[in-house]
Figure (cartoon, rainbow, N blue to C red):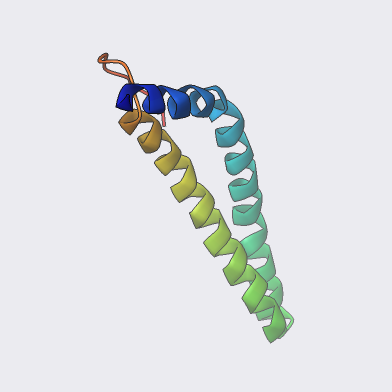
Amino acid sequence: MARFFKSLLFYPLFFLRGIVRLVLGIIGGICLLVCPLLAAIAYFEHAPKLWYPAGVLLVLAFLCFVLRMSYALILLKLNPTDTILTLDL
């Protein structure tokens, strides 16, 4: 019975893995590129209100990275077969 529920979760998550990795990578990459730009503008233009969005973007980029890595770990734990599954991170 447990194998059935693992399969029920594993196969849809495995099917969506490529899309999830792509979307999280794009969002995290854009956030990581925009964050230093906002920080530089805030520093050179003396605009303290821009430090907050720069920090939020940095945290969002880190969360995208963590979610991307933990998605692969969840798939490895949910593997319903007895074979060894290797996923590229």
